[in-house]
Length: 56
Image (cartoon, rainbow, N blue to C red; front, side, top):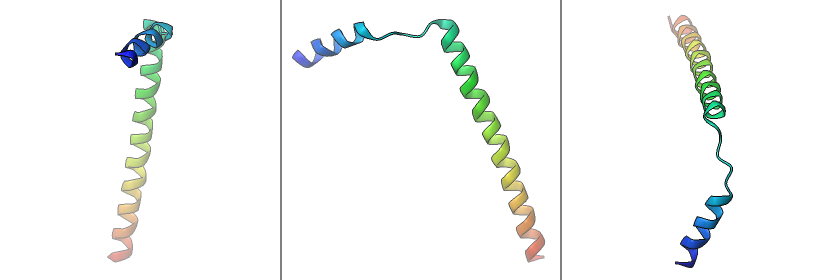
C-alpha cells in the first residue's frame, strides 16, 4: 500500500501536456514515421531492382 500511495503522490507532480501540445507532438511523430516508411520503401525497391538486374 505504501508503494501505491507513493505512486499517487508522484502522479500529482506530473506535468501533463496540453491538448494543443499533444496534437502537435502526435502530428510530428506520425509525419516522421510516414517519411521514414516512404524512404525505406524506396530503398527496398531500389535494392530489389538492383538484385534482379544483377541476377538476370
